[in-house]
Image 1 (cartoon, rainbow, N blue to C red):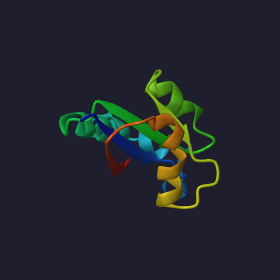
Image 2: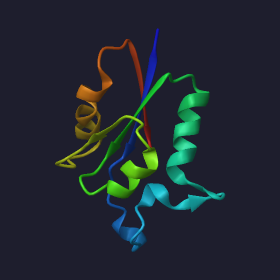
Image 3: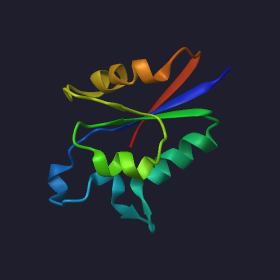
Image 4: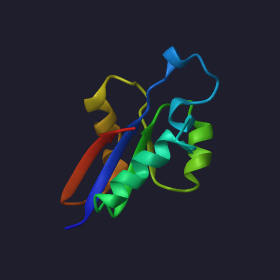
Length: 99
């Protein structure tokens, strides 16, 4: 069984009052998103899809070609998972983590 992880990183992070997207803020010397990706890999995920907001060019660049999906309408967690549907393809096991 192939395990696919969905990392939810589409939030705007407005409470941080920073020009840097929240998933790229450093924690322990690394972007927060890096920790989430490493945790998904450690859990056995063979494919990782990161769900991003519409104005996420900096994060897309940081992902360097890794699969991502855009949550255009940001209507909550369920909508974020639905946004990843086309990028997921067919698989038999999916785990979702907030990024």
